[in-house]
Structures are given as structure tokens and as C-alpha cells.
Image (tube, rainbow, N blue to C red; front, side, top):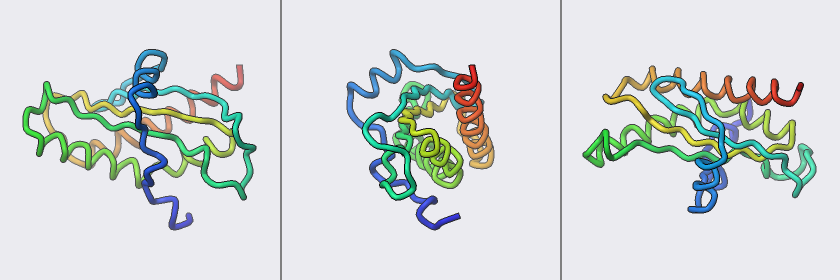
Length: 143
């Protein structure tokens, strides 16, 4: 595994009110407790899929912890930091899948548990969600 595959660059962060609104309005979702994952997958028509091109097909993600469940900012920040780290360490299969199939992916990880769970549980949920994302899209493509 190359060293750069463990980074979480700005280009992978989902920004913009219109993109976020479109994700929640039109996206599909599933639950990997303690996370609810909402996603949209589109074919990337702007660039051909090649190893020499920059990582234009990297999935863009949004990480969210609700203020209604965690009133203190330090608690929300801790949860977001843990989810971001778990994603950063286990995102390589999703990046490779998106690049190989020339896909634009927008993914939101929403924390839905009422209490703060251990990092190991969050990491396991993120890994499971990433596996489920690649498997779900592979099933959609084969139909």
C-alpha cells in the first residue's frame, strides 16, 4: 500500500450546501450501527479512468455528529475526529473501487448512537460501511 493512500486531503471532504442537500435529498442509505451512511454514486464523465491521472475519482465524504444528541462541542468534535481517523485508515478499498470504475461518490457518515462508543466500535462500523458500499454498488452494476 502506498503511503499517500492513508491521507485525508481537502479534495475528499464534501463541501457546499447544494452538494450536501442533493446527497440527503437523492441519496440511498443504510445503517452500520452506530453510523447511518447516506451515499450517491455517479459515473465520472470529466476524466478517463487511468492510473496516470490525478485522484479525481476520490470519494468525497461528510462526517456528522448531531448537536441534539451531544450538546457539548468537545463531544461532537471527538466523535468526528474518531470517525475521520477510522475512515482515513480504511478508505483505500473505496478509493480504489471508485478509481477503477470511474465513479464520483458522495458519502455521509452520521453518528446515530445516543452515547459515545469506543473507537474500536466506530472503526469496525466504518470498515463495514465501506465494504457494504463497494458491494452494494457492485450488485447495482451487475444488474
